[in-house]
Each structure stands twice: as structure tokens, then as C-alpha cells.
Length: 357
Ligand code: UD1
Ligand code: UDP
Image 1 (cartoon, rainbow, N blue to C red):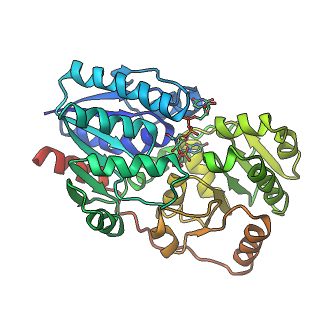
Image 2: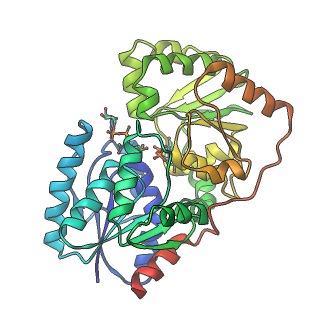
Image 3: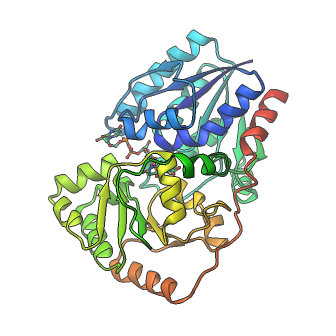
């Protein structure tokens, strides 16, 4: 069986790495295809290096663009790549435009599609990710749900493919890499003691000047040092709206370039708590070797398991609301919780299922 493993962005490279590792261990016949949705070194190449992934066998260089342009380019170029390699199974991970294009190109060629991290729903149709994950789940032949909750969602929607509960590969990645990360992380700035770690990149947040202003107000209100590895989309929008200098001049704020995975694992582990709108970071916060509180700068989450385990709290972007939630946390010493996303063997499980099929 010939397998196409498709990645396009930072989180896909990280979360697919345990699957690639398991495919290699089993001597499976696969190609790693990078759409090139992310292309800057710090959101793409650095992860191949740190995670010891082979260079992509095929690189499609789709780059940035409008939603339709980016998805359309990926669709056309992936179809060609799948035909060239005579693919039997396409594997996609998550909810990006690359994922939608990979699933659609595969389905239209009559190739089986496997969706890693199936069954997540935010029920927020403003998010391109919600379109992508819904369509992908309904096209997929194999759905690898991270939890029973996500599997129940898929069964409730009567998806046509087979649903398997596997855990989330992000936990595998945390477990496989933390020791190495602590040894090799190359942080080229001082990590201040007791700092807060921040990320924000969601379109519904950073593409909106009002929200960017709210974020600045929130960060100003946190009486601790702050480390903010800034995503290229957010950097572009802070600059475009004239708010970048306001952000950088906040007391105790360190705006730094996007970090490699080793560096980011170490930052999560050392942080007092995390503020983010990222999906993957909500999950990583629950990993047994991270176990941090994460305030979710959004109105919804597709990761309710992280709320139930006590790690995540959805706080939106209203400064009063967010700062009150942080105050409550600072007053009550939270001791951490149990990881709801599996035992770190999701990648092996997924590959076992694929190769048995
Ligand atoms: C994409 C995904 C999002 C995921 C995120 C991971 C979609 C719809 N969105 O969002 O789900 O959480 O990746 O980080 O697929 N840019 C650069 N350099 C790069 C890549 C992007 O400067 O290497 C800038 C460009 O100005 C680009 C913008 O970031 O227009 C947005 O990039 P894009 O890939 O469209 O979406 P992300 O916001 O990265
Ligand atoms: N991450 C990283 N460096 C950073 C910020 C995040 O390596 O500077 C990693 C993080 O550990 C997680 C993933 O990137 O595994 C999350 O990606 P992102 O937040 O861009 O996307 P999302 O998960 O929201 O789709």
C-alpha cells in the first residue's frame, strides 16, 4: 500500500511526526508531501530538522493567499502528486486548508482518506478550520478520533468512514521530544523567572483591530513578565494596524520570533501559565510532562476535554473577563490535572490500523 502523508503548516508537521516515525518503524511505503502553506524557516523547516523528519519527498510551494486561492492551489497540485506516486491512502492531520485540499483531492481520485484528529467541532462557522474539519470528516474512510468525545460527535453526525479512538499524536510528540528539548533547546533570549507564555494567531482574533487592541490591554494588565513568540500572521496584522509598538512597549513584554518545537516545549514547561488561541497548545498543556493552565483567548473551543480536565478555560478577549479569570487562578493554587488525550501511543495505533486494513 502506498501512502501519501500530507502536511502544510507548523502544527501538522509536529502532529504528523509520530505517525511518520511509526510508518518508518514498520517499513511502510510512504511519501511525505509538503504543500508549502507555511514556508518561513521558523514555521516549517526548523521542525523537520528538530523532529528528524526526512525532507519532504514532494514540495508543492503553494504559499499564502486567500482561502479559496490557497485551497485551490493545494487541491490541483496534490491531485498531480497523488497520481504521480500512485497513492492508495492519503493521510491528513487537523483542520487547515491543506487538510481540506488533501482530503478532497484524494476522495475525487477514489483514493482512501485517513483523517488524523477527526471529530473536533467548535460550532463556530466564522472559522475556516471548522469548514475544513467538517468536510474532511465526511469525506474520510478512516477517522482517527483523539477521544471518545470526538468519536461520539462523528457517530452523531453519521460519518460514513470507520471511527477509531486513538489518542492525540500531539501527546506522543511531547513525550518523544521533551528530554531532547531540555538538552537541545536553543533559546536566544533570557527566559525571565515566573513568566507567562503567550501566542495568538487565529484569523478571527488577529485580523480584527478591535481584538488586537483588547489583546494589548490584556497583556498590559498581567503583572508578570511575558514571552510572546509571534506568529507571522499576527506580526503582520499588529504592524498593519499600527499596534506593534504598543505591543512591544508593554512592561515586561518580550516579543520574540516564532520558536522551534524544542524551544517551545521548554517555554511551556517553564511558564507559570499560558494565554493562547492555538488549538495544539490547549492539548499540549495537558501533557503529563507539561501540565499547565491555559487561558483560551477565544469564544469557543473544539477541545472541551481540556476544560473538563481543568487545564483550559475559555475566556474570550474581553480584557476585564480575561484578567478576572487570571486573578482567580493566581489566588487559587491549581495543582494540575490528568491528560485526556491519550497515552502517547496514538501514532503507533494509527499506523497499526492502517496497515491491518
Ligand atoms: C494556518 C491555519 C490554521 C493553523 C495555523 C498554524 C488555515 C485556514 N489556517 O493559519 O488553522 O492554526 O496555520 O499556525 O489553514 N505567513 C508568513 N510566513 C509563512 C506562512 C504564513 O509570513 O510561512 C503569513 C502570510 O502573511 C499569510 C499569513 O501568515 O498570509 C497567514 O498564513 P496562512 O497559512 O494563510 O494561515 P495561518 O494564519 O498561518
Ligand atoms: N509552536 C512552536 N513554536 C511556537 C509556537 C507554537 O513550536 O512559537 C508549536 C506548539 O508547540 C504546537 C503547535 O506549534 O505544537 C501549535 O501550532 P499553532 O498554534 O500555530 O496552530 P494550531 O494548533 O492552533 O492549529
